[in-house]
Length: 113
Ligand SMILES: Nc1ncnc2c1ncn2[C@@H]1O[C@H](COP(=O)(O)OP(=O)(O)OP(=O)(O)O)[C@@H](O)[C@H]1O
Ligand SMILES: [Mg+2]
Image (tube, rainbow, N blue to C red; front, side, top):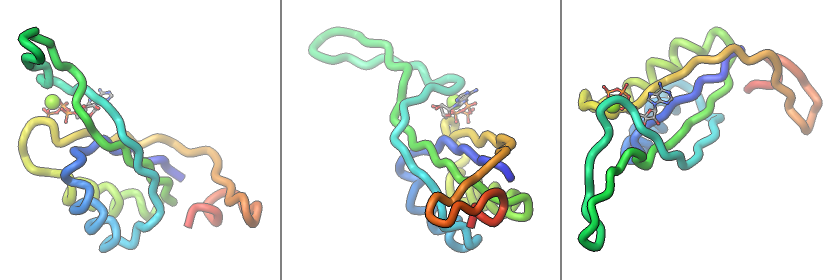
């Protein structure tokens, strides 16, 4: 099992969701996040004062998948989130040692989907 964590542009969420649904990936957690990648520092003036802005609104998607769904999930995330411009985001793939469906107490791959 893997936990796929993707940081994406908020505007890309509809396209990402569409791509994930097409890949038959329906279960996910989405949270608001703030982030800074390479080259995302810029300056903004607020009430006459210059501020260095280093954190930009992003969305964090967490998707737990079984091994046979890793590649299709990654492909869908890239297809939905990519504009080709700097700041498109990052995907992290983590080993997931355990998953438990609380209702049934199933564990492991059976509990994921
Ligand atoms: N190394 C990292 N660790 C943790 N979060 C990161 C990392 N790199 C990027 N992120 C997250 O992803 C968001 C988008 O990053 P971004 O797409 O700008 O990455 P990048 O490496 O600068 O690529 P690009 O050259 O396309 O801009 C960041 O705002 C941050 O939330
Ligand atoms: Mg960047």
